[in-house]
Image (cartoon, rainbow, N blue to C red; front, side):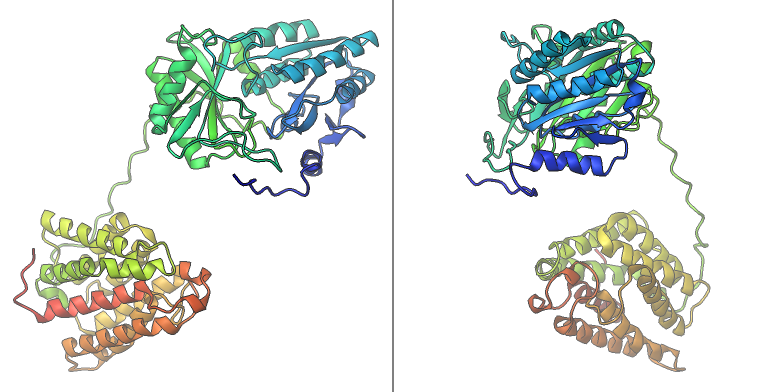
Length: 582
């Protein structure tokens, strides 16, 4: 097992460097000389008030230093990664706060043996010096059905205790009142974690291993073992498993929720989960809680207390009344506390109605150009061609893109076929291209769908009210101009534009009186095919291929090949009156 890569300067200095970086970016914070202690820069504001001190090992960022600020913590004491802070640093922080004129100092400590011991010893020494110091130990973990002598671990719910205590202290509450109210809040709170991967201390191997198809329920924020390993579940089922475990009355660590009660929900990223996954989990948690009759008074979603790079999530539930909710909503300058929407979370919000369709042009628009022939024959030829070359386009795209160009064009082909089965396509060229633009924008997907949509929309606008052959040359130019204007590519950039521009140049012959439209289109197809083949010698200037070294691009651009094939299919459909639409 290899040691994972970390973006640090040194293993030994990573905790100090992280704190220094935080202070550098926040004018409201200061480091205490000679210690891993961060304090509010406005310590004069502490005089006559209760000061709040917390902390623990590093590696849980933004906890705890991110919660220092007006309305939350007065200071924090940090240890090395996953290591309790020293007694000396805790005592130094207490002394600074006492000397700043605090009328009382509350230590908020997560329930881990090292934290309890070190903060506790510093408390005893500070009391012997005359300081009025109290300690609240937070244990919010719902993992173990029968907690041992050590009790419930302190995890992400501690952040909510920081907030409640900070709001009370800012309002001028005394030490006894703060202790009483945060102790009561702690008893009405529960947290449970779920992990898809381990974490690793800088310079060390991962603390445990999970199989590719496994997840672990109830693990600690240092990688401590959980209560169960299980197969990876869909997000909805995983969240239901978590909530069921958290609220099971047979679990001695459970949180009691009754229908109609209000909770603050905290959906915490343990460090390595994507924001996409976090949003999915948050939505699932809201739905599952509402199905139990629980009102989610507030929902906080983000990174609050992490375990380095662990890919996982924890759910925290705090049962609240109006007073507690006001304390959660109270203002704070702590940089890691989110802007919480002032209102309940719910999955039952009404959607904004979709806009009404803008009336299109009349269906009886006349045309004598290529649109006058049965368009189904031409469109079917295009669809068949795109499906036939699907694998070829995918293979070409794998060389420089994500390998889905063929799939994208196949989606367009299937969408067009389904559309033709549902209704006869309009014969009027302008309306036909406009309908195809809407269809591809909705169904095709990817940048190709947008580019085709741009091209067809602009071309349709040029064809409106026109039926002369030259209109098709003008429409081609309009479509290309729109693609260049919004897509940013140009001829020679190794894109579909290379084929389109070559074909457009040939189509200019339609402006010559008496020109044979089919012969001109044949020349346009040949030009497009030659241009598509020539892209193998070009250096990509746009699209995903532009990130690939030109020496690796020894094949035609798939988009250019697709455009040439589409134009060839249109020519074939126009020339072959015997072809029957499927």
